[in-house]
Amino acid sequence: MYRRSFKDTRSSLGSPNPNFSKPMVALRFLRALSLVRRSGLGACSPSYRARGIRRAAYACMAASAGPRRAWSRALLRKIRRRPGRGLRRPRAVIWRHRPVGGGDRLEVALRRLVPGGGCMEYCRLLEEAADYVKCLAMQVRLMQTIVDSASHV
Amino acid sequence: MSGRGRRITDEEINELISKLQSMLPESRRRNAGRVSASKLLKETCSYIKSLHREVDGLSDRLAGLMDTMDSNSPQAEIVRGLLRS
Image (cartoon, rainbow over all chains, first blue to last red; front, side, top):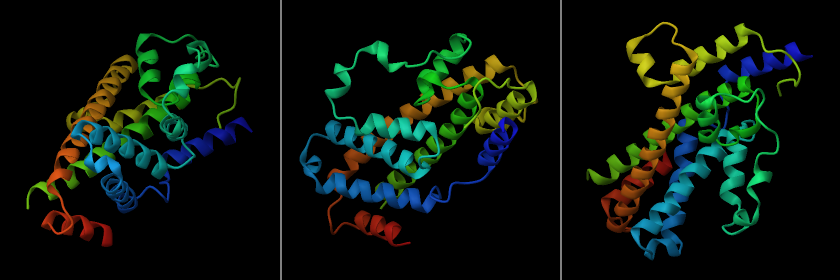
């Protein structure tokens, strides 16, 4: 049973999520951008708008990756949490399970950077980090493409 | 889900480490052999941080560009074209 679970992990490393193709991500993000513009944010200061856009970027990235990934679930939970509610939660509760084996300084740093990385096994952390890096890089390329095409006309 | 209490073999960790290594841009350029796990973690952390900074920067630029975009501008046409394709 445990062997099979690793094989599933191995196949999930290679098989693409059907929702996560580049056109789908682009479409989702462009729709989010137009929503930002149409909502009151369009009239706000650029820095406030930038925050909304950044939030939309991470939300679209996580939504496109789907619920299979721990990082995308954690990111969506964090984004959908309303400001103010998170502040009331005591810090001790956030890390429900201590990371297995303590971990060195670098491993702790990686756990902080990958969403949801606080309480997963080391093996899982590496897998999630690889997927997170891949999706982040794709999101950056997408945003760069939009900026380039919008500013060179 | 990975089973709790199961001992992870070195082979499985090595496989995941090479997978992670292939995601990083530097290792792709250098076509390096195996790097140590700690070096890989360090590179991954700094790469993720730089990607976060890029998202911040691009969000700022997009926010600035929104000022110049109105419904009749050619930029909006491009964006509409992207949406249609």
